[in-house]
Image (cartoon, rainbow over all chains, first blue to last red; front, side, top):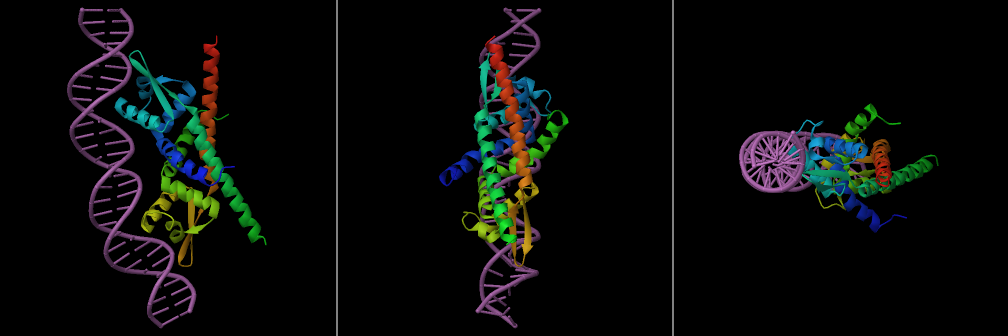
Length: 113
Length: 113
DNA sequence: CGAAAAGGCAACCTTTTGGTTGCGTGCTGG
DNA sequence: CCAGCACGCAACCAAAAGGTTGCCTTTTCG
């Protein structure tokens, strides 16, 4: 089971992933990539209110968090999701909410004597 | 199935939650609250490197995201997790990674002719 | 070939964020 | 009852984040 060191590891690895997801525009990009597959910067940009350069920055943030990766193809660059870190984030949330559920259960037991 | 409007709603509701989790200190606070139950600000502070006021700010951020809520008890204030938004975040990740898995599957099918 | 499409790079600006220090207030326990 | 603990409020600060504009390079295609 996940205990001790691995929780600490989850924390350091998890924070950048959550931070990357903590922006509406980036969350929307992730959603579009997840439903429409690999997209070029230009295609991601139209549909958004901000500049292409802003989108590029967001993609770089997502990339640094390991959530996404882009590959040059001719004159354009296609970006696609990398699913692994998403799973990590989900696992972290599972871990926390499981522990919280147990804590609640203990508390309930205590209160009910 | 989750489609259209509900995805958009997930995005607007999800971003603040992820943003709140996107900080190592706050993630650590959430972890401690999930394993140790309700804690006072003072108790949260020792074990962390920063000031009590910094911790207070972090708690307010977590509170604004609906992740946590504090209740005054005598001269101290106890903070505890509110599990619901965590579930929302987890559901969002489930949604995205499920869609991504399907997209990958479609792509694979296409490539393998 | 040459215009237009796609994008990289860099400078710059404003707002937010994470943190601090200083001081005031309320509760409590010996 | 009063010393001290736990906390709130406010001002302030440096760095990071989100965004823009301007310009240059590479690639495509009629």
